[in-house]
Amino acid sequence: MDSAPTANVTLDDPFYYLLHFQEVLSWVASRHGDLLNDDELAFVSAFGALPRPARALLVRMVMRKGEHFRADKLVYPEIGDTLSAAAPLIENGWLDPAPALDLPTLFRLFTKAELSGLLRKPLAAAGVPNSARKADWLEALSELEDVYQAPPDKPVYRLTLMPLCDRFRLMFFGNLYQDWSEFVLSDLGTFQYEPVSFSQGVRPFQSRRDVDAYLHLNACRDQFQAGAALEEVEAALPPPPDSPWARERWDRLCFKLAREWERAGELERAGALYRDCRHPGARGRQLRVLERREHYDAALTLAREAHQAPESEAERQQLRRLLPRLHRKLGLPRPSPAPPTRPEVLHLSLPPAASVEQAAAQALADGGHRALILARYREKSGRLSPFVHWGRLSEALLEQALDCLPADHLALCFERLLADIAANRAGLPDLIQFWPAQRCYRMVEVKGPGDRLQDNQRRWLEFFIARDLPVAVCQVAWQ
Image (tube, rainbow, N blue to C red; front, side):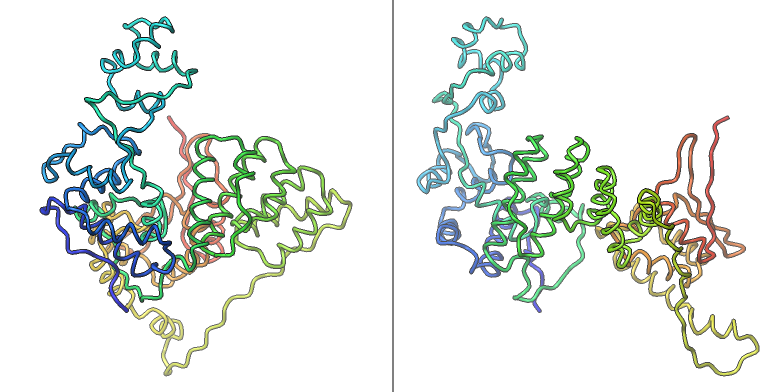
């Protein structure tokens, strides 16, 4: 096993961002070289041969938003003359030195004073007064389909490499929601990541087809989030990919599309998407759609199938409500209640003692968890975690919690969380109340006026009550 990619880079180095970018290229070439085509391999080679100012300028643009940049705004002391640094990039075709600009891009890049000279004739033809706002100018000219060139004294560059750089970023991070700023935030100590070791064979993508499928799905997701028509997004959606990595994202987008069709009342289209979707909750939504369409026989068949192997506690809860309702609507006898759950049986072999309960307690809860939890706190404190708000958890508070929380109670809660992290991390009671002198605690779910329990909160409360864990619901009324 070799270490996860980490460059020995500090923010004191003015070219820190370039070193990070080169680290990404090197890592991707070594781990995913077989998934790169000739053009991508040629870029890696050609980039390394460029003068450092040219490489740095390219990376500065890659790490900024958009693809169009005014040359006079690209001012970086460590790079020096922008025009000289840009020349090799233009020669390689990585920068377009005179791109055609549509109106929104033109308005984003230039000030109102600059636009008044560039667009004098169109503005006069549209009858827009000079005193109008810049946004009003754009609205008045929005129907024009003309494209424009930047003035010679204020050249604009278009970066032609963003799709390629996004592909490299995806292959490095394994996703597209992380961007180049992650390196800087890590260097600053804002983000502290758990160090992870990777063997040479461990990588998120096993074929180029996997990468292409992810990029295709990401484009569909961007289209969906931008508010495109649902028909367009669904038409662009590829078939379910073979890769589990991409299939998970396909299912997630498919579920969101189906939910929108359902909200729009297009139940048949929603049901068809739910049927092909493996996203958690899709089967439950399909059951709702079948019931709303009064396809009770089909709903009952699917509900019985789900009842044999519920995917989650949420689905089990839904089925407890749905099955009796479907039986009633179909004129069938009410289903028999579920058999009582049987607890796990533990077998201990212990020396004789005066109290069997105390002997069992010592064998099952020897206090070792306390030292382990405190050690983990000191080791991991500050590292990004979806479970811990480090600013709210001091070591003193953790010590107090460990004084009041029995080990077996902690174990029960942890086991439920681990059984379905995505579903069970939500719905926990709002507060925990400690009595240090009595070494006990109570969980408290707080509800204000007009507020009511959500299903995930009910599931946690049922869990606590079934195991005799102390919990209460606090109903607040304003005076």
